[in-house]
Length: 399
Ligand code: FEO
Image 1 (cartoon, rainbow, N blue to C red):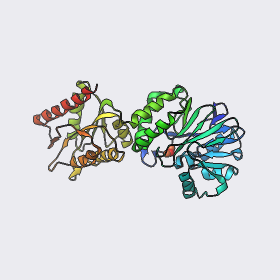
Image 2: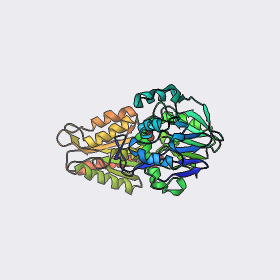
Image 3: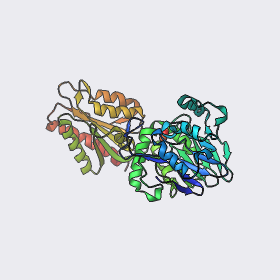
Image 4: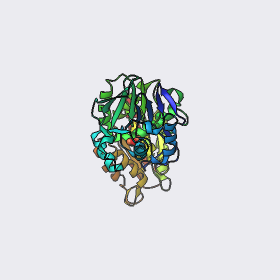
């Protein structure tokens, strides 16, 4: 990404990552991700975000150098310490010898723990509403702990009303030459926003709601997050999306997540999907063995109904489906209805392991559980029809 002036005297100096396969070592990102960073040139020079993953240091420093010599940086603002944004901090420490690292109290501890940076006169600890005057421009800091790390803050440039929001309002997806919301295919980036939210931020819905309340007092003309598009045309849109996702607001649709060894469970999955669609229900069908859980988590996040199809395996739940259910539970996903079907083989009841994960989430179970031995009988289809009818009722009730 060439350096670009996103607003007077504010430059994009971030990079695209199209080579990491699994963000945080877990989440599949075949379409990449961007590590956004911004350089503000005023009487003082500020870098917003500690940079990028260390792997991208050369491009990152080249971007900075096209605006100013890195040794001119006065402040490095660390909104959040995760190393996708701070991997380059040790290099900045060396090559920007006069720079002060601006962080929260907990961030200061992390600077020491992650990078061995402890020198008192290189660190400025800020708290809620503190400010740094750059000359004409002024940075103000707001704490948003828990979005998604405990030391997180955002930085607001008051004269141009730009919110540098860190991970909040971020998305997967390399930018590929894009920068702004009005330049992009929003369908792609909004799907990646939902998936990013579900994967990365999803456990922290209450802190997101707290942050939205606090930031609601600011006049915001542009949102410049640390991943994904910069929202200059319609910043309200990304705020509304984060609000909706963090309130567990659903679409009237069903996610049908199944796993299968020899096709029996898959046959019933196909039957149920067809029946639901013929009754006007929007259905997303995912084979848990083949679709990465990061996508399933995104699909499930705003689905009103989640239907698990799984055979019993080694006396328990079929592992690929179980892992997805585990992630729903791990992320404390709420406000769902769910159903279960699948082949039992000889013992059955593997689905009980799914119930153990899901019940504590308070989801509403849709009857009946449709368990069958192998070949699907007419009696099994009658039960499946009842399950479908009950799903249709739930979806239609709220249409
Ligand atoms: Fe993009 Fe939480 O770091």
